Length: 352
Image (tube, rainbow, N blue to C red; front, side):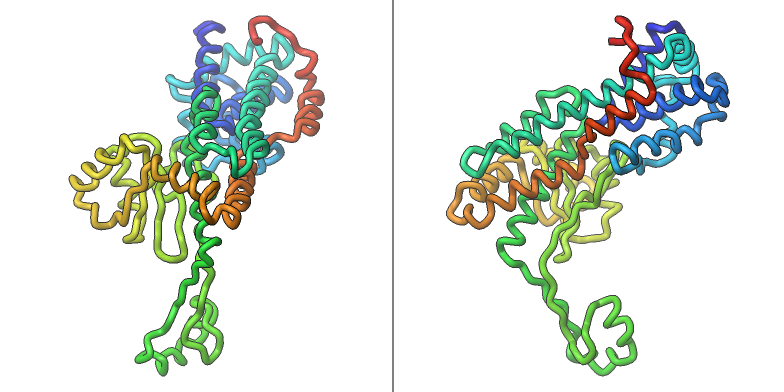
């Protein structure tokens, strides 16, 4: 393998990476370790396969506030022949040592560029209000940027979560948990359980909770299954791509709830219903919500009769969730990091 081919392998994983660029950062830190400490052998994968995750995580915690939660097997796909195998890394490492970290600098420049693209979507939320916010226009921003397209499913999750949570708050939804009257005497035997797990106060047989919906947090490309859950029994899965039989099985089969809601593009609704019917699981799916319905509900929330009670919290939620899902790199701190490694002094036409 020559340098051009090695660079092509690197560019492929950068282009395919979601916004957090975990795998490219891992490559950068392997190259940094090879160049600075010289305590690994690039051709011997076992000298850095596992430890390089820790080097990557130190950077990710500093600038992203999180690390990859994908399986070890999925993370190790980075070194497969169709990604950046040791033979490609060897060529990159030679170039990197020769030019004082030029490949590392290249990777981190792509990282900074990707987060610069994200600011476009965030700026849209800041610059628009309930009168002119257009959900379709907002989503299209992410489709239009090649670097952000891989994270479009997370954008859909944020869009759905922000709407549903805002509507639940507006409706002041309450959930009542009540012990059957025939079991009140027996409840005394398990009063510790009733108080600590169910939340019943001493002598009480029911508790009223605020309705809530929760995202399961940041997930990765290899993750499947549940995206959100509600404390009133719903399990919610957001899909913007085709639901194959394999994926349907992983979603429905891994969720114990019997009230599943699937959010999808209009063109996928019939396909999803067909797959669920084939698997005999349609009874576990409470409903399918299409993108056109989301657009309609957003319009009502932003400009409908009750928009004065919903719109502001909806847009605030969008901003908060985007900032949480895609934490913007503090440019000052990141520049200090770049300068500390002298990346800012490196120039090379091949690595532009």
